[in-house]
Image (cartoon, rainbow, N blue to C red):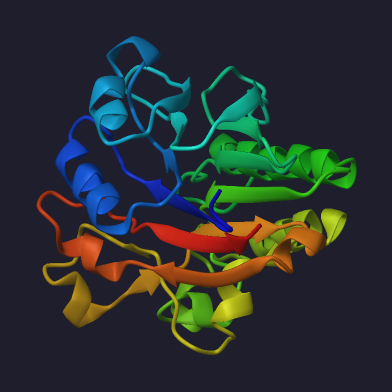
Length: 264
């Protein structure tokens, strides 16, 4: 039995359109578990066979045609699962499982929130804040070691964005979103593994807009993707890395994958 467990998370922005780069990533990095967000595929068209061929035979899917969608693909057994509707409208934005060692793994795709950071003018922004509030209530009741991963669509720290000053009024880095995320973190004492291993103010981004002609040269990144661990579980984390090279592969996602390795 292996004495470590590696878990990856990636907003792939359409798993069928980018299956080739996901397969390349799994072949090169071989995480034990991969959590995907924004799969944009209903369960019946999800490319399950392709992942099974690579050894990811344990699959828990929560898909939706054309939009949203999350999935957990694993080389190790998964037991139980849940699909929580923190959006309160039936969108496929969460799936969770329990591993054989008792640890829970929760995969979430938090709404982007539209373009205007005002609940009254932009209902999508209000839905995002409400989603976070429901997650906060859920976090407060957790009683087992849990890893929460996914696209949070919030870059909380000044060093999580390319320009704090220029993005203060841009959805994903506004003070109200950062405060909501801080309440979520405090509700369970979540440990932000990205910043545990790469302390601020060191540069750490996971997303770059498609609008840039040369994403690497302009480097206008944001850290929107996260891995948070329960305090006890965080003590078992022995490594965390982001894979910027994937942003250059084929038809890339605008997000890159992250991996955390745990000691069992």
